[in-house]
Length: 160
Image (cartoon, rainbow, N blue to C red):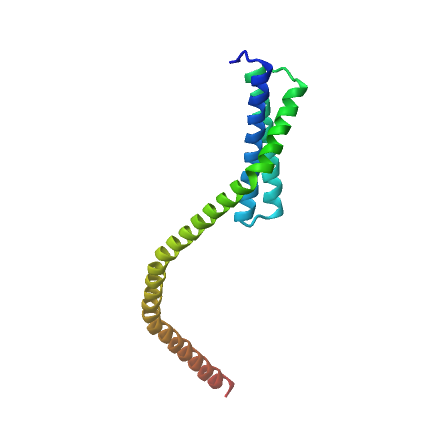
C-alpha cells in the first residue's frame, strides 16, 4: 500500500510521525514517574521504545514514501519530535501522571475494601482453628508426658 504524495505533504506526515514518536517517548516517561521501576525494567522499556520507534519509522517510510529515504524525511521527523517536546510534552506528562496516580489510588482503595472482609474472615477461621487444635495440643503434651514418665520409671527399675 503506497500513496503518491508531494514532498510538502510528506514533510507534514513525517512531522506527525515525529510527534507520534515524542508521545511514545513520553508514554515511557509517564510510566517511570508513576510507577517505581528497577534498572532492568528501565532498560527493557528503553529497548522497547527503540524497537517501537524503528517499526513506526520503517512502516511510515514504506507506506508513505515507497521505502525511499530522503534527508527531508529525517529533518521533518526531528522537527516533529522537537516541536512536540517544546510545546505539548510537559502538559501531556502532567495530565497523564495525575490520571494514573488517581487510578492507582482508586485501585488501592478497591483492594482495601475487598481485602478488609477477607482479613476478618481469615482471623475468624484462625481463631476457630486454634480452638479446635488446642485440645489436641493438650492431649499431645499429656501423651508425651505419660511416655516420658513411663520411660523414666522403666529406666529406674532397670537401673535398680
